Length: 395
Ligand SMILES: Cc1cc2nc3c(=O)[nH]c(=O)nc-3n(C[C@H](O)[C@H](O)[C@H](O)COP(=O)(O)OP(=O)(O)OC[C@H]3O[C@@H](n4cnc5c(N)ncnc54)[C@H](O)[C@@H]3O)c2cc1C
Ligand code: SF4
Ligand code: SF4
Image 1 (cartoon, rainbow, N blue to C red):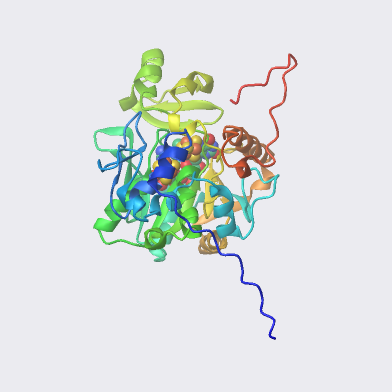
Image 2 (cartoon, rainbow, N blue to C red):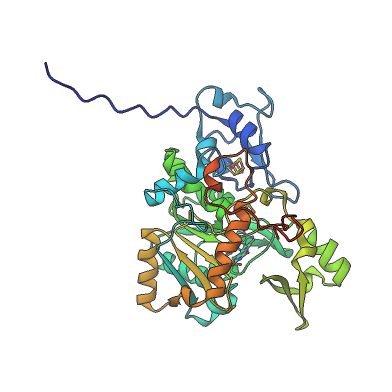
């Protein structure tokens, strides 16, 4: 008799649809509003309003009510495959990108190189939020035909601080959309414009809540909807603010009008530069009440599933902290350095940045609810007790 090997266990069939997404993510506080489910729904039945107090998906068809989907009942599962907060999203994306899950002390996710970078081109450097690295990379990717366009954040024509998802297709459009807006911008929504324009090789620039979506789609075999995402550039992020912070805090308390602001940054304090040349600092504690709802349970400070994550923490404010995570990210950055379009030095030189990266990653992970998937909280140290026994506030 021939001995046969036992058949490998069959992978469990993925059956979760909008019903499960609605129950487990949309209505529980885990939904960040990334719009991953919205742009990938093959039946276009998930709506989304890119407006203050909204930034959340909702079901458009009436047949089964807001909590269920007719196409889902017939077997469509794309939305849960695309959601970067559904069930075991962190191990899924880790395994797909890195072939292993993060170690318990890898609070900022898995990486290959930690650098400080900046664009060598004067305009890119000046227009960029920190070192202009993201803009330099998008331009390089476009010029070297890695991508046809990038999904980024532009602004409304009548309001230079109202962020809006747009496509950048050339150098001029990349420069015009450089810099940071600290309100939410669901950049994946720009995929719709790309489709209309027949563009299918894209980079996504976005916070961790957005850049984890393509890797979970790839891991969960979402199919052709996941194909246009070729390169993910992450932005480090603790939170975004409601648009109401402009009139209700900056203008009402400090007399700083939105239309007169030229630049903002967050470096321990909210920094604001005005057209008249004045500079203002606002304590972040004062801003907390305008934290956007979708950020309140978000555990991912360091955009842990991007090809390259970027931030501005550290002692120099004209360099971009650059966390090179994937092989593809490493290939591109090495070619960019060789081409002389960026300067780079080891980020480990900046001890402050290294410490902050870990601390802020821990602070974000502590927001993840205990009842949700346990992997996200592995290794997260409990908050230090204050002398009187009370735990300190998260920020
Ligand atoms: C909401 C937000 C919060 C952030 N919080 C932190 C933080 O706490 N600590 C930290 O170190 N870094 C943070 N960053 C990242 C930092 O501000 C810079 O974006 C990053 O260092 C890259 O700088 P750069 O000069 O290389 O990028 P640039 O060349 O200026 O390119 C920036 C890119 O970001 C896109 N963008 C701008 N605003 C948004 C938005 N609201 N949503 C999506 N995309 C956007 C632009 O379209 C552009 O493509 C945050 C960024 C954002 C947008
Ligand atoms: S987190 Fe993103 S993909 Fe998940 S339900 Fe919310 S908007 Fe959809
Ligand atoms: S904190 Fe940043 S990464 Fe997290 S949900 Fe908010 S915008 Fe997204």
